[in-house]
Length: 491
Ligand SMILES: NC(=O)C1=CN([C@@H]2O[C@H](COP(=O)(O)OP(=O)(O)OC[C@H]3O[C@@H](n4cnc5c(N)ncnc54)[C@H](OP(=O)(O)O)[C@@H]3O)[C@@H](O)[C@H]2O)C=CC1
Ligand SMILES: O=C(O)[C@H](O)CS(=O)(=O)O
Image (cartoon, rainbow, N blue to C red; front, side, top):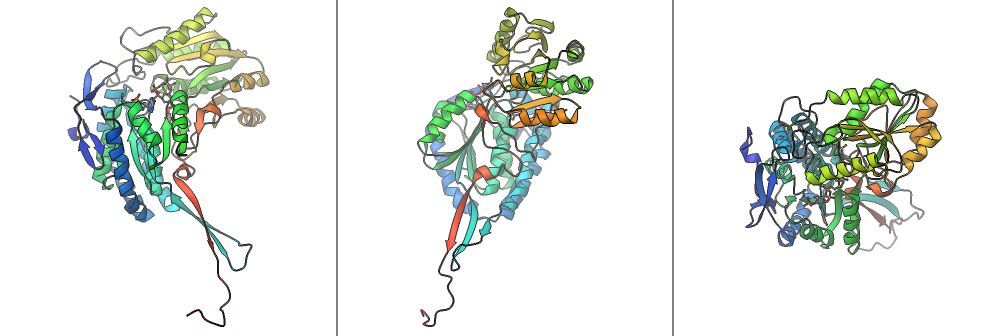
């Protein structure tokens, strides 16, 4: 059992249409560090998903009719409850996802920040008037909630990926059905329990767990659903875009990445090492914005490699509940096998390990933080998202060469570089084909900036003032007949 101040936050039922429901068939949720079963959640399918969608559709008129101030107050209450229960939510997250408790607490605060941000943005959904070309007409533009929304979220950020969608949706006056990842449903269900306690009305927010295919197909094809927001693999994102096309749903896609992390010869090397640790090894390398390729100028390559390897040796690997642990287990054995495949391919093609290099002595899905040198563009690590604690170092000579290599991918989510020459900073920031660029930092995620990618890393933006736009539709009202008073009054 988890040591929670409020054990009622550990829910083994789904929140559907304002009711907590069970099912005969369940899914076991296991702790990736120990393999222990943490809880069981219902294995729901299309029927319950339809019930959640119908309830959302029924709740929508009253929810959209509330004032923005009213919705904002309820979101603010949800935000306060999330922070009041931060420790319990973090323990639940670490138990099901594996990340160190300190990181889990950080994610809960990050997740809560989206609720707070969009509680405020709810009151700033402005329309406009446009000077009419016809004197007897007035042109008014309003923004309205898109309607019933669906969210499908991944296991790597079990809280933030939900609030980054539910926050703007509910703030805009939409309603939402969420399907969390089957490996990390408990955080989502705890958030739903707190939303209910905050007074968010029945049907406005539902959480369904179970078969991804059955639930996903219902969410992607039910005509009542007007928008689908997805965070996860590009492969599944493409599949969902195909499924939603039949009913022309709005979609937001936050998909895979392949972030370059470039260290120029004029970089502050200690700062670059610190940035590389944050960008590459947060969540054990399981984030879509992780540095996936580290390009280091030949003049500083050996020094940077040595500094990075030394810094990695100081990072404690272990169970997320353990004090001082910085690198937890990967989500499952499939994730470890993907890292091993990338490592083996690089070694076969001439790369060398300078620290780490295999599964950790702790066993299960623990993996040694690893640095590879002598890496080239011909290796799989250059083309595929590793999603693990493997830092491949590539050597480069010129700015043009490294920008070309950095852009040589179908992905375009996050990118990072360290340099101090002002001209270079502007040139490289403008030439990188990515939705986000970190300059002299390895951590760019927050609620105020537009998070998202270009190319095959996705569509739309989350967070910032832009994030609520994806949950709104524009209405144009032409008010005609505004003539001068007629002599013969109509009545
Ligand atoms: N951009 C990002 O932030 C993320 C990128 N990834 C990338 O994706 C790779 C695989 O990770 P993984 O977690 O398996 O990502 P997936 O894309 O497989 O899963 C993400 C979510 O999509 C759901 N899903 C899976 N298949 C379908 C489907 N056919 N229809 C509807 N929903 C579906 C999953 O449900 P269920 O859990 O029940 O299968 C989960 O809720 C990672 O190695 C990484 O490269 C992964 C996570 C986040
Ligand atoms: O999906 C992810 O990996 C997250 O978006 C990463 S972040 O928002 O925590 O940077």
